[in-house]
Image 1 (cartoon, rainbow, N blue to C red):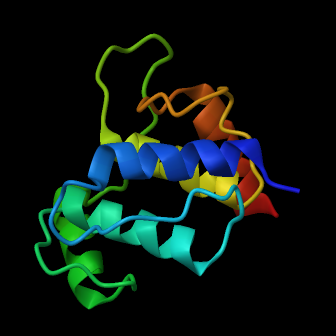
Image 2 (image 1 turned 90 degrees about the horizontal axis):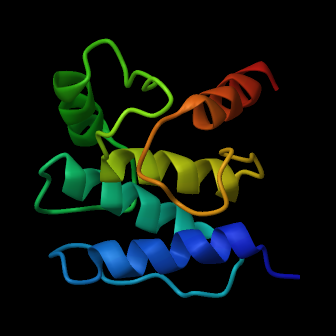
Length: 124
């Protein structure tokens, strides 16, 4: 059975990144697999300004991530207006691992529902 949240993640990834160099596309089938995981990684690399994307989270991605967020990505206050595709990538990754991000679609916000899911993931 397909997972509707995974399907929404795949659709969002294609809608947001298909036209970006280095992304390609992801099959929209509602199943988490390497294609979806790799698409999430490539999307993050694009957000980090990496022009030659790869299907791994290697030293280049780690270095760019740590430069951009030396103290990690912080949760927003609920109701904050700032949006970021990185927050959407986080939500999609959580759904693909079976965690609810506290919303019925990708919001591109990092509110308490997403924060709660990350805490749950870390404690499991």
